[in-house]
Amino acid sequence: MDREAVWQADAAALADRVVSLLTVVRSAEAEIGALLVEIESRGVMELFGYRTTARLYEHLADVPHAAARRTVARAQALYSSDATPALAPATGAAAVTGSLSTPMIDTIIDAVSRIPATHRDTAEADLLTFATDAGHKQVAALGARILAHLDPDGPAPDDTEPATPTRELSLRRKRTGTWELTGRFDDETGTRASALLDALAERRGADDLRSPQERYGDAFSDAVDLALNSPELPTQAGERAHVMVAVSLTDLQSGLGTATLGDTGLITAAEARLHACDCKLIPAVLGSASEPLDLGRARRLISPGLRRALFLRDRGCAFPGCHRPPRHCQGHHIRHWADGGPTELANLVLLCGHHHRLLHRSGWQVRIATDGHPEFLPPRFLDKRRKPRRNNIHQPLPFAA
Image (cartoon, rainbow, N blue to C red):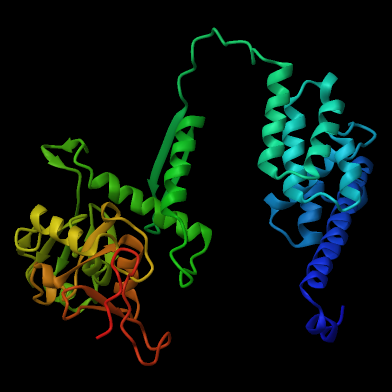
């Protein structure tokens, strides 16, 4: 359909064209799957010099390795080879016609794989018939009902003693100043950790351009913050767990130079200014002769009462578009404490870890508007007029006068 025909087509014609193209695409994907099984059967090393068919397809299709592995595994379930019979051959035949979407194929394969081999052909036929008029959830539910009918008692109970959960973790500081984290966890712990990091690693609006690795790295940092702020955290030597940062007052005020982190670590003075906003770290501000001028947060600490007032006012991260609730947020001094900014509600704003770092390291600015709520000025490369923006998720937009 050329461009002129597209402009002239009515709704029905446009939809019909989309469906016809989807049929072609799905049929081509099925043929690709059959070809991959043929390559696997002949020997991908002998044919192409690749160790696995997934590695070959990764390069042929320019897709991530995980996606290539899923494609090959799906193909092996649909099409027989000399070495392995197909798990769902009827579904493979239907896939060649282009009538099944990839998610529907995966749903049927998953259901058929759970059904005893002697009943798979009948069950697969029933699932395919049902799939012509039903969605993925309904097909999955039918597969579960078929399995329940064939095996009403479920798997035999395991009378052995439950195994001790496998939990191992190593955290090591390298000479470069980066930390290396490795570990192994049992399925339950891994599932809980994955759920926590997934929740913390969600993208925060269209301007969040972090890679998945960066988002999960920030999510891990946020999870550490949540744990450190927990009232149930065990004490060390009679104190809650903390990290001390030593920085000269001159460097703290200017944001230049370095600060000592813990026993051996180093961070920039600019990062020390960021951490000085809230009570994750305990700063030791030193004079020119390294004498302690201020140790701790007696004058700068956000008191529990003030924090509650901040929670009530901002109701979560105040940055425009952020969904983070108050418990995931830190108090940020609008006028920095090192520059003489007071620790009072009119000089504080609630920010999640990501937007706290963004505010310290970008052209964004925050101020308290005349109605007492925070508003943010974007950098000029985003908006030359720097029109103030607010978070309308936690707070309603102000009414126009």
